[in-house]
Length: 128
Image (cartoon, rainbow, N blue to C red):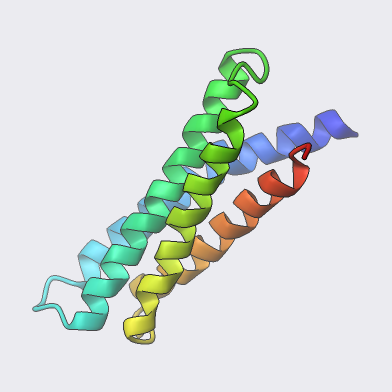
């Protein structure tokens, strides 16, 4: 059962996150060719932070899978989780400047919330 969950999680992270991040950036670029309002700039900043959090997650999962297990120092994992949580949180905080109006701007809070959930699961699964 645990192996099946691991494969499903890997499929989500290595398949779903890249597609979501790519879709978010393509949608944002297509819908924001006009002069930017301040809320749109904050949305762009939030998308950048959420994307950085997703890239950190994808890179760490891929690294751990290719290295045949957790070869990172146990002390560095909480730091990695903290950086991912901060990036995802900054993605949400950047939206305080205005409510998302377009579908491109709505990608940011959804991606940030998903990344917060993923990083929170990592933190909860750590041995304290």
